[in-house]
Length: 91
Image (cartoon, rainbow, N blue to C red; front, side, top):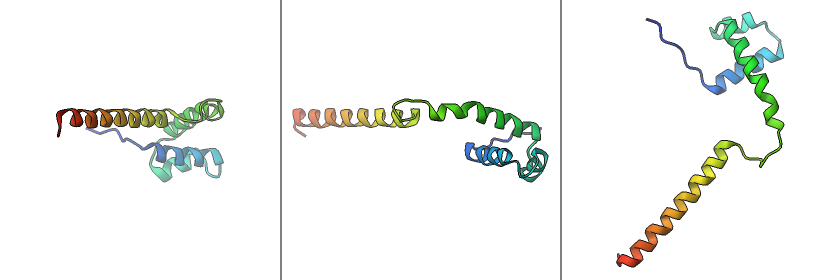
């Protein structure tokens, strides 16, 4: 039984950027990385369809940065609560 290969987003981006440059055909890139050309075309389509979101106006932070900031705030709040409880309990 064959297992599906999982590729990192960095690897996919590298392959897609090579495909966009059109220095080699998609078939050649597929042979180079041992990936089916249809998969490269799919990745390229998804990449290009999401590219416009890079330039959309917003807060300037992506979701992961916002989530990280929220988690840091929660950690800080919990640390303050722990410190307060230590004072109250006298430890």
